[in-house]
Image 1 (tube, rainbow, N blue to C red):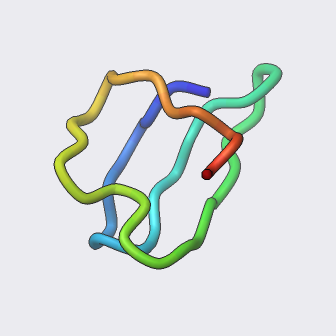
Image 2: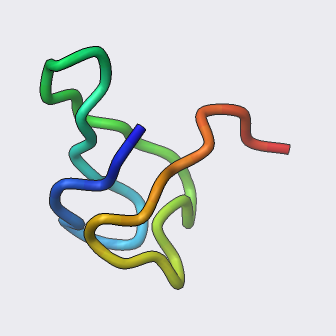
Amino acid sequence: MIIQKILNNNVVTVEMNGEETVVMGKGLSFGKKVGQSFDERLD
């Protein structure tokens, strides 16, 4: 998944399988930048 837009520390939009998807989770985009890959497995 590639980060398309960071809405805040908890919400990002990503491109997954050619579709734009909203991903939500506590602090998941902290320290990330647009264009970085995003691991769908959060430990």
